[in-house]
Length: 268
Image (cartoon, rainbow, N blue to C red; front, side):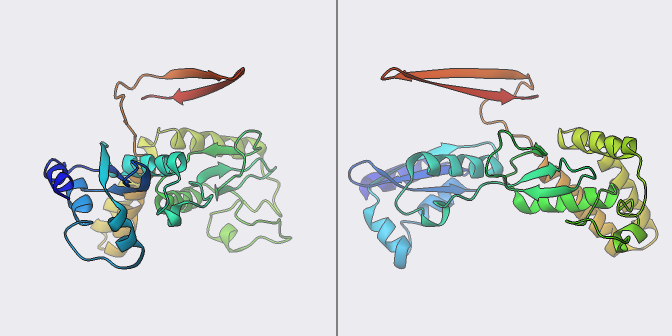
């Protein structure tokens, strides 16, 4: 405990991940924190029960990794858990994955939240993954309000409410020009690749219009939309911050086997 107390004094208040180790230096738990000093110290300065108590009794040392943002700590946490499979990370040891935003490959496409089991060979156009699942869902809701993609899972015989409120082009009854849907796909694709200034500006203008009309509830709704957009398109900068596009290729050889990995970095 004396060693741990000395290390606690050196902790930063920045966000990051921490790795708890047992007497054999095996990683038994990985966690993330908005404030590393406060979070890690909480394991040793108060009483615990259940699983946390068992964890603390087995902690003999810890390491930590500082990240630039809380979102980066979340991304790093899930990768460290997958790498080490710590004993006490029961809640995060399932096969759940981060969601993607998908434009389906159907004749009349839909814009949906997707968790594809296999990325390679997937027919739809995928964007992500997004660590903030709630913000991703809200962004899809926002884009579906602005762009009238098909909303129903199966084609109905008659137009539904979405058509009457202008959020669908009535694909089930109307003969929709393919060029219209292609333009929507191109605009949404551009948006999800980071070119969101125009959409953000449009919503911002609507927010001020609603506020000037004393429609404060609607103004708050538009304000929330902007926040969701900013969260879901938040940039990551784990180690590089030069906004350069590059492909990183690496390989590893062992026992006559070779493994290649390709990492695509776009605009940093």
